[in-house]
Structures are given as C-alpha cells and as structure tokens.
Length: 102
Image (cartoon, rainbow, N blue to C red; front, side, top):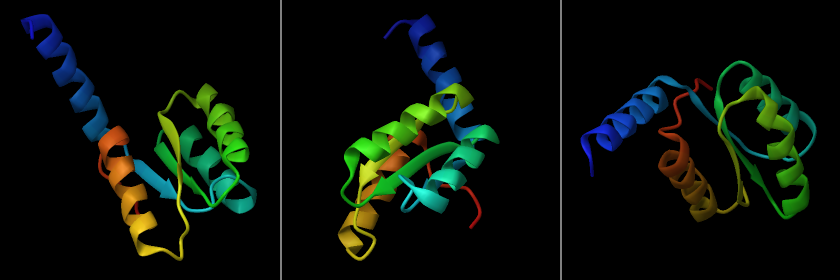
C-alpha cells in the first residue's frame, strides 16, 4: 500500500468513525422506511432490514441515495436472534459500529 492510498484509507476511516450509524428493522416499508429516510437526511448511515421483499428494500436504498449517506439493506427476521446478530455485524463491517441512540 502506498503512502497516498494509506492516507486516503485513514481519511475514509476517520469520516466513518464520526458518522452516526442507525439500524432500522422493518426499514423497507411504512414507518421503518420513513425513519430510514429521515435519518439519512440527518446525516446517518443507514442499515435497514427487511423480512422477505428484497425489491422493496432495494427501492428504499435507492430512494435514500440523494441524501449522500451510505445505506444498505440486509435480510433479517427480527424473530430470529442469529438474523439480527448478522444484521448488526453486516452494518458494522460496511458502515461502522451502530452508534445511533435508540
């Protein structure tokens, strides 16, 4: 890794550590989608979960893009502990630690 690429990676990590990250369960529709939209507009990186409708989740992720914050969708059943653990892990790996207050 060159010095300039190392510096760029450090800048990216610094921005990532300063940006709040929110995980929204049921974020592909209704109140969850509205919360995700509001959060992205306020500067949060957003990880939203969806139960089964990937297309709806993808539409929400696309709708949030103009806010300029990283957004991703993760399939997770909130009734399955392993699914929720995977959603948090994916959010942390791709966006940074979930830090938004509940």
